[in-house]
Length: 238
Ligand SMILES: *[C@@H]1O[C@H](CO)[C@@H](O)[C@H](O)[C@H]1NC(C)=O
Ligand SMILES: *[C@@H]1O[C@H](CO)[C@@H](O)[C@H](O)[C@H]1NC(C)=O
Image (tube, rainbow, N blue to C red):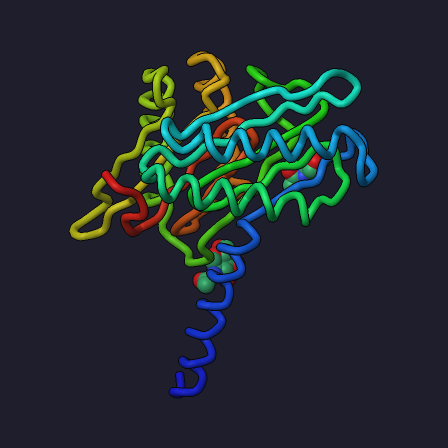
């Protein structure tokens, strides 16, 4: 690669990561209804986001229902299990603001960032596995079949570990593939799920490895109730 090509490649990477930081990795506006400017739903949603912004950071998880039917709104926020409450707060503030801009006047929406997930709906969803919203992200470099088998093995272990810890529903770990090559992984569920449903949710998204990131060096599945990520570099605090 020439210097200018490398420079523009680095520039694109930087731009992509800035865009990701501002707009999130992925989002989905739900089709469960719309509201108009000035509706009570709008005020309830605003209050919900404020609640999540202040209540999520200390523990990494917050959920709440606000208002009365037909303007009742349900929401949750989840921060990655290893992030500080400061980073958690920054993420939830940004996610809560951006998702309302990306899904204007939608009663329901979800957005995923590196450090957090924010979801709300006019339909109660607490304690249920979200099979509607599912995002795939991947690192396009190919890897061997052995690496892929080890990835799945690591994620299965981490799914067991996360669902064995009802307080955090989070696990992270690494595995040595061969000399100086490691895979790093994490699994996490939203804390409205039971440990049984957490396991079920994680097993379900790990089954989607071939769809998401078959023979690829890194990947993630982010669903509304659970997610995993694996990379060939450390991306979480142990
Ligand atoms: C977005 O939500 C709709 C239902 O509201 C669902 O059918 C669709 O699969 C979702 N898209 C993703 C990427 O999760
Ligand atoms: C990765 O593997 C796929 C399927 O075997 C192949 O189509 C693709 O060209 C490979 N990509 C690279 C960068 O090697």
